[in-house]
Image (cartoon, rainbow, N blue to C red; front, side, top):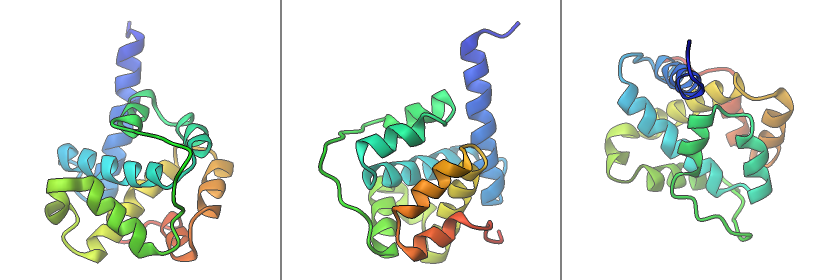
Length: 149
């Protein structure tokens, strides 16, 4: 019989495997985790605290841990007005691995799309619609159909 921690780990691993699969490399979970973390942190940095709590309430427990890792939330946040701002935020959050994991803009857009596609299958349509509503048009498109690998 599984304990609760094992169940939470299983759900998080399923989520991470889906990200890796969407990225086109289902065996590279380390890279998938780095990309997931960078995109989640970029997303988190551009949502209000209330929006973040609503969103992450639907994530698997251990994915929530990735989301909040290092979070210094405040009432002050800056909405994204352009795709480039979000891409810059992803690069910043990726840190030293940005040049490897997000080598080109097209790879970055595909990676963001892969994470968003995974999230879209995890959280309610209403929550996805809410997230899409707070972003500019070009970023909303990344929530749509998965981009080809």
